[in-house]
Amino acid sequence: MTESQSTTKGKGIEAKGVSAWFKKHKAIADVSLSVVPNQVTALIGPSGCGKSTFLRTLNRMHEVIPGARMEGKVTLDGTDIYHSDVNITNVRRSIGMVFQRPNPFPTMSIRDNVASGLKLNGVRSRATLDEKVERSLTLAGLWEEVKNRLDAPGAGLSGGQQQRLCIARAIAVDPDVILMDEPCSALDPISTLKIEDLMVELKTRYTVVVVTHNMQQAARVSDTTAFFNVDGVGEPGRLVEVGNTSDIFTTPKDSRTEAYITGRFG
Image 1 (tube, rainbow, N blue to C red):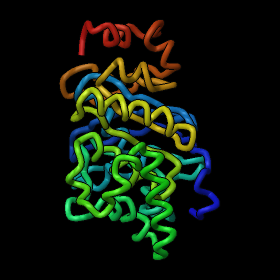
Image 2 (cartoon, rainbow, N blue to C red):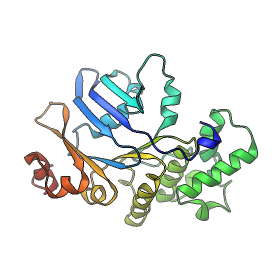
Image 3 (cartoon, helix red, strand yellow):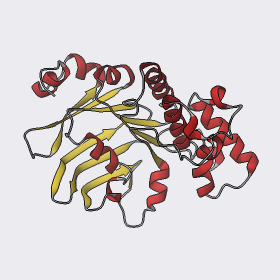
């Protein structure tokens, strides 16, 4: 993506009939979901219902696990990301991912952590790298905290700062979509609030999909909520219901959604 496209609005993702396996175990079955551009979509549901597995199918991270496979179709702005002609690296650059636990590159400085993806994509100009590092750290709400120690190790930051550094690293390459897999589960309440505020800000530039076990977090940050569930032991996870977050939390259509939201199971 060129510099002139760096403020391009987020793009939509369409998943149709997505099923995924870990060897012989079917983790999710026949999931179809439309992810609206420039919104935060939250994936909720009990542990083991396939939320994170589904998330990883959206940027082809699922297939890096030995023995894992998927069936179905996933498109980004109409382009089939699983088509044989599609470059996987480009897919993962366009659909970035932030994991449950902060994972800055431990031997790299703060600056180099953010610039790593840019360098892999062939950016060599120091001025361009510096500009994008500052921009990404600013968008991630971290610039003011680290601008005077960019050459310090990224692993030396606090947990919340490390997670925002990972977000800065993801957005440095100008993605269309940011996937977040329980990005606050390892953080303290203050850091969690900062990440939540950041998600709301990021949707003005990107499309955001977040997996969370925190019902209050889903209610606070998301525009759309999708509820996943498992009908029994050994059964695959399925998408039960999706809708506007306010509707899902106040007037869900499925009794299983209501039971989960109200804490009666899960």
